[in-house]
Image (tube, rainbow, N blue to C red):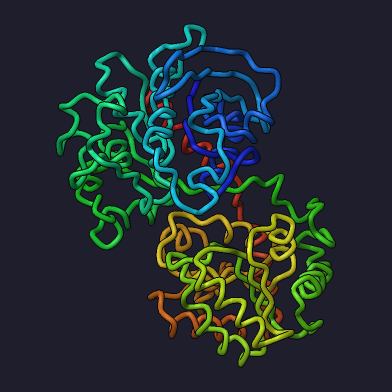
Amino acid sequence: MEVLSVASEAYPLVKTGGLADVAGALPAALRAEGVHVRTLLPGYPPVLAALGPAESAWVFEDFFGGPARLLAGTAGGLDVFVLEAPHLYDRPGGLYAGPDGRDFPDNARRFAALARAGADIALGLLPAWRPAVVQAHDWQAALLPAYLEYSGATRPGTVMTVHNLAFQGQFPPALLGALGLPPHSFSNLGVEYYGFIGFLKAGLLFADRVTTVSPTYAAEICTPEGGMGLDGLLRGRGSAVSGILNGIDAAIWNPAADALLAATFTATTAARRAANRAAVQARLGLAADAAAPLFAVITRLTWQKGMDLLPGAIATLLEAGGQLAVLGNGDAPLEAAVRAAAAAHPGRVGCSIGYDEQLAHLIQGGADALLVPSRFEPCGLTQLCALRYGTVPVVARVGGLADTVIDASPVALASGVATGVQFAPVSADMLAAAIRRTAALYRQPAAWQRLQANGMATDVSWRDPARRYAALFAEIAA
């Protein structure tokens, strides 16, 4: 089966978050299920630089304000189409914002163009290749099902995959014509959303199926508390909305062969993690304390991730004899609070503001526990990496965190199935209680080693998710 995946980023080519990890890893996993995926990406400079020998599959003389080409080739291990449109994608800054941190003012055009190119391919632009199913990822690709709907042509099946409902892509209605949408599309039964053009709303409405990246998150977004204004629409889609857990690339995240670690290890040689722990302590200026439970945070420093609760939890963590290693960046006040904590507690709190792939692997391979106090979490990948590396995840009971971590309750401990610590609700008091509970478990070596072993035995690969996606695509194609 041929599937077109349309995404604004894909690892290892370009990445700002978990969307890139999924878009980059899922195609390889689907290959084993007889599904061939070609991924359509914007022609950012890093993508074009990584593109091998490419065929100019199509030329657009005027495409959303300038000339563009559709290139076909391979990059980063992916079979790709790349929309080469310098007027849209060749610019300094990030994928979505300029050097000043502000969103590009023409993001509506930039990602409508991506969706339009995907719709054109889906409708037979390239006679030699036509997909049976199109998967659109997040708001940046979400106009694609609407373009297909308004084309009136016979079309392939469509899946709208939501990685984070908080980012919806809302733009002024005056852009309707410039985006190639007909006047009658601006209605409650079209792309209109609270007086704006709603990219994600359109995808949720017109796609044949809507998937999220965990079953619990699929249920949460259908509620007023978690739906962010779209819960009514999602409830109306009924059984068309479902959740399929993410996986991680088990080749990249493999503690037995990870070149980014100070020492590789397996479940039977977990004692070798001590070398990684020592390397983390040295890297972040922490005391070489072999007895202290080393807690870690690897995340964006934002309210969604619960990072505003972290400064208040540090006192509890230190009282429990722990150390804290923080890797991440995000909101300036939270970055400042983390730096201040490190300055106030030298040798006990260390931080690296920014993102460092090597350090992320090293922390996963050396920390004892990973704190993930997210207020909402569609799936989360960092806790899956923690399980794989024998780092015990301490997570809020929300979204994919609830689906992937088995709480160390008395029954789960007695049954030998626990893999981590869950807490709810997401509050300072409950996070502090979870930290105390984790520190107490750490000082019970047999129980702690069982938690680590159970986590490392958990299948967090793409094997089962790929089977589920393949079955979904087959159902839609039929």
